[in-house]
Length: 221
Image (cartoon, rainbow, N blue to C red; front, side, top):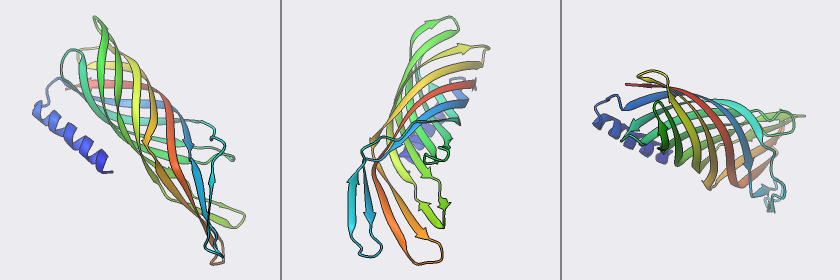
């Protein structure tokens, strides 16, 4: 969470220094996201003996496609380079066979227009994002499963196109790929209802890989 606060604070200072000129753009985003949440190994604590058993994860989880929303700010440094920061939220509902989880992400990035013609531009983007992955709790056949969230740091790369439809309004469509740099841990407690018995599980080396298509509308101040 410290990284997210530092990124937003630094960008806020840049925006304040700009005097909120027409170089500042706010964007609303609609996201189609395909997310894959994996863990490298699992550690289970036996409730009776207190011993630990660690196993490597052999199979990768299936990708889940879900809609998301976001909002971002961009500051135009020159004709080609922009600095930005944003907030996004996606809920991945895996159905009966997959883990349901949500992802709240805060990111900072830079975009560069490598091709421009009149009111149209193609750009590349790169940045870092902080993800708070929150698995859903569950209850099945008298067993209650409580999950704790994991914090991850990802890198982001992408390509996009932007079209200026009016003096202060633009439409953008972009593809973004995100993968984990700093892995996290998800802690799970499985308790049998009506008893004091519980099993604790740690899913370690958790990673989140995302492929996203982002459509946005921006307004410049």
